[in-house]
Image (cartoon, rainbow, N blue to C red; front, side, top):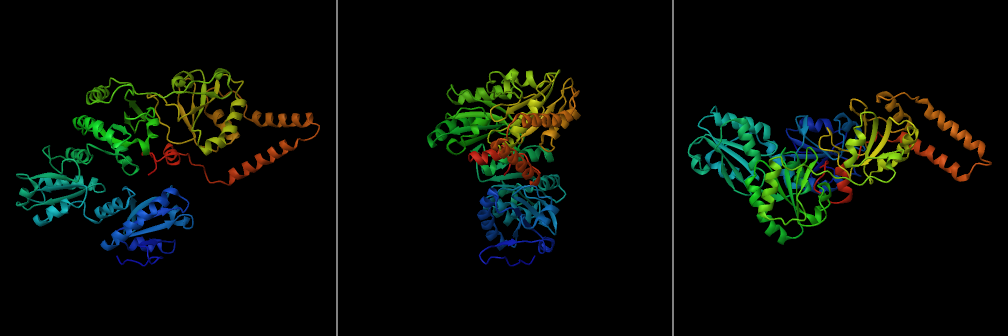
Length: 526
């Protein structure tokens, strides 16, 4: 591909518009494009890293481009860009998701892998230089291209090419360099054991599991850039929070011994409490260090280590063994129910009362899962209160709310809260859960309950009628309109008009909370 000039002389990132985008990506053998918005904080943070990567990759004839979705919405809508930043790899116009990190070196490594075949054929002279090209490199030896080792490694490489580099050599003299006697494969790493020989079955699934297990350090510091690698691993994740280097060195070395015993089954990480201590809250830990907890990220389950006990090798081993054998129940975070909750028009749900109040087979329960800091939740609050008022005299329909930052849903519940606000109706009798994803207006919410609730023997129109009757009564009783009431009415109208003008509201994620409140590693959006 012929490299194109960029808008700024000192930039190696190509700015693309609707007039240049399609021709550019169609002509590119390999190209990375970022879709961004100037106001996006993550995009602003990415910009210098992206530029550094572009400067490095241009030497290897790999072009990086960017599209401003606030001005080039036609391009972004055509590619179904749903959030910022979104990065896509293009090969001759065909796009695929970018799944690498956002640091310059991670972008460079990822795109270098993309520029190579999934499995590189190596001469004996190329083995050592190739083994040093990335943090994790897999090299195999097979006597011929159709040998089982070559075929299996090709299959694994095709699947894992985004994450690791793979090479194969048929040169018999390379076995001495690789440290093997015959056909086989070796992993080279820049951490832990730098050279590991595979001694398992030559089967794709077994080799893939071996590579993925060896690619995870026994214990490494967790940061936003590597969090999702751990979160998506499918393995439990043990966090060790340390406050200073002394704790990391002394206590951490003891925990590492346990981590080695469970390698491949449970991942262990260091977590700097000074930077990411707020993440301990999500694991039901107090802000006291050192601390440790096991998390099943995909299920939202957590097992905090008793903070009244000392973190010793023996204590941690016992804790992890009991967890792995299913002897420890997961921790359930719960606030206290407020006084007078039974008489409240909007009932407050807490972790400990969830089963009793939400799963009551005699009642339809419509729950808002919210976060106190969430702007969308704050805007919904008066409407939700109005909904509670409307259903107050209907004992078999309950309007409820749950602060999902202070309470966990029980482990047996078949969902986890992934955004705020989340609205769910728990039907009476069958306890079927119905998600609400419509407009957040009073009328639409009432109609939703009418449509999906079991106890739906009420008239929807009465909501509007009641409002009109109340307004008429207030007007008749008032000698003169009160200025503040007039202003409130005007304000309400303006708010409603503004809401109609807004784009469809996307739920704010717990991950975005981390970005707003602290530099936490546990982010949904990376």
